[in-house]
Length: 488
Figure 1 (cartoon, rainbow, N blue to C red):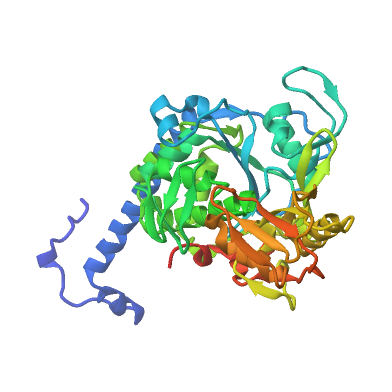
Figure 2: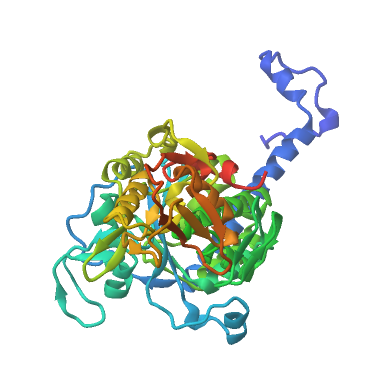
């Protein structure tokens, strides 16, 4: 018998068999909801496909280095991901017009201008950034000199000189040797990639409560909020003479800028737009160097993580300083870390813990001042006939945290009764902070003196009073989040 042909909808019986209660409920769901879910799924899958295909093409743009070649006896791996972010001057790739406009004169130093350990937590919900002062006292492990080919035993250096001596490999080895934090990836950024990235983002907004002026870089910003283009941003993060804080202040500005950049990148939709993300990534990766393991998967992983970032997801600190102006024979003045407090920072990175839970701003009964003593450089001279007075004042100021030169001198006159602080008017806030530590001292402005304040010890000197920064953000040992250092 031939099979019975299927009935048309019209010929089917109107009665239906009894069904479970759940079936009628499902049948009542609006069809537009099903279509919306299916459409959203297609869009998400398509976007993911476009994102991967777009980002996959960027691998070819990255210049590769091998900073981990033949490395042995490395620290034990922790949780999360540690990236050593290295900033080099790269001024040999800058045009003559840019060199003049942004005051980038001089030959390239082939050294690291900026060193940061960027830790991305294992759950990809937090970024911790630790700045390492470029003049930090460090000890290299045994290595071969990249320039001369000579074998070297471990020896003291400023940490930024490791790059000139042994390139990225010795830089990574020295950082791991000093911190006991295993570096997973290496990323090297120069002036060119930095400026291109800021310009592709459409500029980055920063704010300053005080005027910033640095004749060395050409930076000149009045108080207020500013959107900086690539070249202006470079001036902002390079300036060391905007006040007496020198490198410490510059690192604080770099942290503020990075916080604002993260805020802009995560709030503007760039990371959700594959094509825009490609443009930004190309601007960054077209002139950076990275290890061979930093590729498409890592870029996508970071991109996904940063989509959930907010300014409060990032936290910043500078390695606690134990001694400013630590003089080393054959090297000169260096910055020596506080071994106990620095270890707390590095332990937090190894254990994938927020910095804020283990590192807190220093608290004491010290007098509050506008500028932290660690940001103020001081030259002391003896204005009396009392032998050793300048040396005693220098040591007392250094013990309180001031960045003394460590080389007190004798003043032209020896009849000074009242201690005098001579300062450039551009550093008036630093002068007032120093005066708080020297009760009864006289302030004398002297235009053109520069960032170093001069103390002429008088017969009235008795002691140095302890002071600390009024704002914890300006303190040396504090941890701040991105929403605390950005513009509000």
